[in-house]
Image (tube, rainbow over all chains, first blue to last red; front, side, top):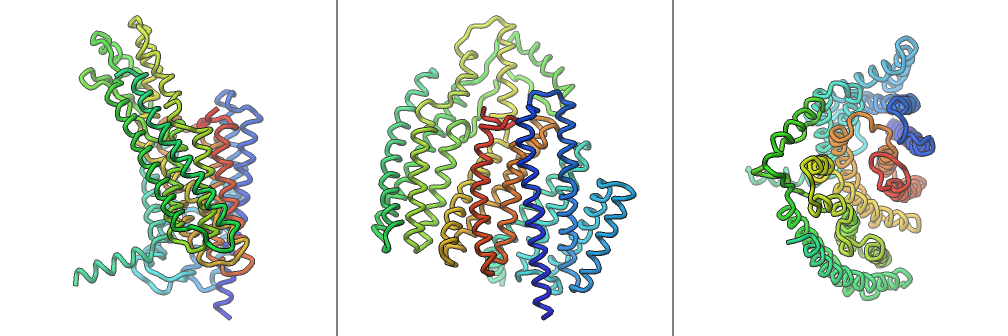
Length: 205
Length: 343
């Protein structure tokens, strides 16, 4: 029964992710048509800047939602379902309070930093081969890869806040890229990786 | 070697080659159609050989494109009279002091040369469809389902026909590029005019043709588009029948496609900062790319639950939507204005 509950939780989180990503897709399509019909290409820089600000405002609640889902997905690896529910509620409450007091941007930063810290823990545990992590699928490289890929996504969104600090922004961007690429290799090609490592191990013996 | 001779040799050989590709693809497409409608596999070993031959012809054509680009590199340096160089470098230095990304100074002993990537103008379609050919051939060999094999062949034939009729890179090679550099190599200018002409073509050479990102960002996306096409074909089959073999094939292509798409998009990011500065975010092409990536991400997420009956069909639907989003994203470059526009 417990297994069934965990699976359901995962499943609904996946559905929530799908929903949020679909809304973001819809916003992107809206942005394309708005850009064309408002003839923004021919407008002065301040008008374009206003458009970018507006689009950022429209999309930010859904980016927050995506981060919240990630923030729930990440400890899902660490906590049992009961504690996960409590954690999710606490997180939503914290984000709500931060949004109320300091605004959406600060809430996004808080959610990102929290998720990032948790994701680092998950990645470290996955690298150490800890079996207590709750993943949908088994396999050392798959777990490491999935953790690294999601770390890359969180870092990428966080990095967008540093776009005015070019050196830091680009340095973080490359960290993001490396984490994402290694993550995808681990996640998508885990059987091949495991086989290569096993062969190397045999050759070493 | 002058420009006309260079391009006419390229065109003559290329036209012959692409005609062969078209004929072979028509044959493959016909065999494919027969297999799609037939209950039993028809001439699959022969179709495999034809498919291999199409791929080999594509590779030979790609070699020809490489040859053209090497000739351009060797024969078309941007040379300037020696007395102009100090003045030009002074101007470039002044521009560099105000810009985030610097232009290299002009070195008369090593004049700048075009290192044109192999996927500009109509060549991009050639590369894209060649990638599809290779991936579809591997899928063709891997699967035992003759109808799927048939559809892979039909798609190859459609793409070859599009290439021949609407995007032939051999008919008129690199028209935009030669249009841009034509005045420089054919005209006789005063020093001031020559400086003006140089400053017209030099920035595009540095930030477009010769940038290392141009060698990474577009080909990764075209590889991804090819993989998405195969995922689309398998997704349509999944709607008709619950066949794990086809689903696994589609998923393998989807993983590779997603890998290439994500990496390709990421590598476009620092390039965009370099070439356009910070004000390109929410450009229509960027919007459509994010949309495609988001749909692709949802496909990979839902696929984890593809063993549930409803999710099986939902996942297949998303696989089809990925392809629609890809076509929309590509076509958007022609319809929507912005930094990526082909208008």
